[in-house]
Amino acid sequence: MNTKPRLTDTLRARASGTPMRIVLPETADPRTRQAASYLSEHGICFPILPEPESSPDLERYAMHLLERRKAKGLSLDQAREMARRPEMFGALMVACGDADGCVCGAVATTADVLRAALYAIGLEPGTKVLSSVFLMEMPDGRVFTYGDCAVVPYPDAGQLAEIGRSSARTHRVLTGEEPRVAFLSFSTRGSAEHERVQLVREAVALAQAAEPDLSVDGELQFDAAVVPAIGERKAPGSVVAGSANVLVFPNLDAGNIGYKITERLAGATATGPLIQGLARPMHDLSRGASWEDIVNTAAVCAVQAAQRV
Image (cartoon, rainbow, N blue to C red; front, side):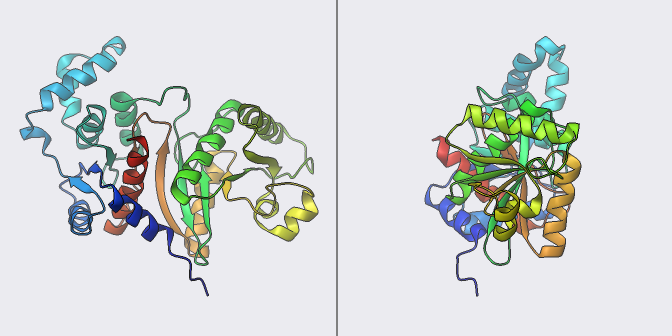
């Protein structure tokens, strides 16, 4: 029987230790309002439910957006119109320091959320790839980080390496565990030869070169990555095989299918997609999200925001 505290409960408790201002801009959605009430009542964060049309900050936000996008041909009138959109308004609040993080996507599409995040907040210095992960909490208490499941359709080797490194950092911050990163493939250590297998090998080499102290291995099949006996047989001597907790999928097809199989057939709790690579935290939601999902994502956002203070 698992007696380990659930990660979602641990994250809520961590968030309440240093409450952050988290904007939930989709205020017309009843799930958002219910989540905001819960977050406030339990002291997990300070939820903000903005009203863009009546906000005295709308013009300031539009000017911020204009400054960032004028080189791309954006006009002031267009910036004003864009700033009124809930997901953009929330991102601008974060960018301008009026909120510590943003959670939306219960109504807006992932494309709209990502666009708002990139236009208003931008990438973290030194980062070239915006990506995402899902935290997958299994019924037995184990937690895996799956990346990328929502953003980069077919990453090249450099992008895949950065997805792996970003996912490792996210795993460390949110779970407190040392990441053991498996780059997944249909091959394990040369059991098959294909250009897609070679791409994974190149990504592993790039990730190892960039962070020599990070526990990384690949290419590994899923069973070799997570089942100890199979990992030992297929990849003897690996520091990752059989005990991986960060799983890097070779493309968005595999990642998206993989997390949904784990959620629906294995009974895992999926939190995400959590966006990686932004200068300040902003996270997406599934449009099928429950109010509890919004609470959990807001807790993650608050924990990450507190790390930056």
